[in-house]
Every structure is written in structure tokens, then in C-alpha cells.
Length: 120
Image 1 (cartoon, one colour):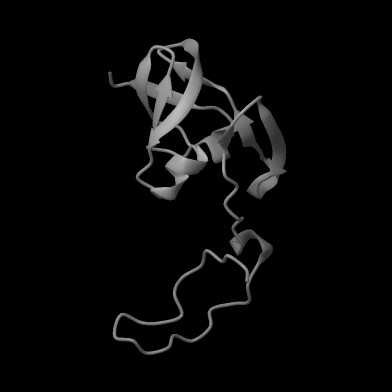
Image 2 (tube, one colour):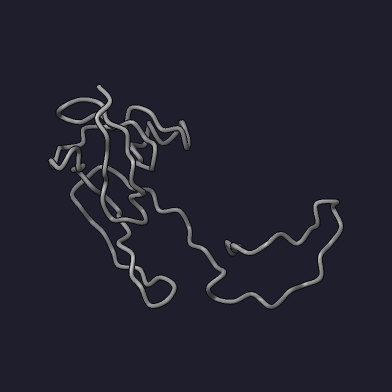
């Protein structure tokens, strides 16, 4: 099933809206690709307007205060509790690094890097 990012088909009252237009290719989103801990792997994805995004597949370092620090594991992930067991990194995840715990502030699947803020 396609992931479509256009307005809802229903009014706030629950009634159906008339169709505005056909679906365009730009309306389709993409599937979630989990970012795991491992040697850095990424791929280039063409985005809307001819721009490109770096889609991460795996990464083993995070940028914390301008320093590259090795990621050891994922301690907490508010997006999905099962992501902790699978070591999947998303925005907002708490990761364990060599220098302590840090919270991920970037979107690794969109930005191509893991930026984090030290919390302990």
C-alpha cells in the first residue's frame, strides 16, 4: 500500500470531501528504513525538486559537541520500545556512547548523520 501525504478524504464532521485532484508522484512518501549500529553505510535518494538526501543504513559514530564519538548501544527510544532491543536509532533516541548517554537531535534517515546532545 502506498504512503500518501495529502489531505484527508473526510471533513471534520465525518462527511466525504470531493476529490481535489489526482495523486501526483510528489505526494508519495517512503517506507521507514531502520538505522542500525554498524560500519557507516548510506545511499543517495532523489528528493522533490531534484535535491538529494543521504539515507543512512548503518552508522557507528555520533557528533557530540563537534567531536566524533563511538556509539555503543541504544538505551531508550520513545518512537518504539522494540527499537531498543534491535538497536535502531531515530530522532529522540537515547544512545550510549564512549563518553556517556546522549539524546539524538538529528533525523538520521533524512540528514545522513547522527547529531546528539550529551545528557549524562
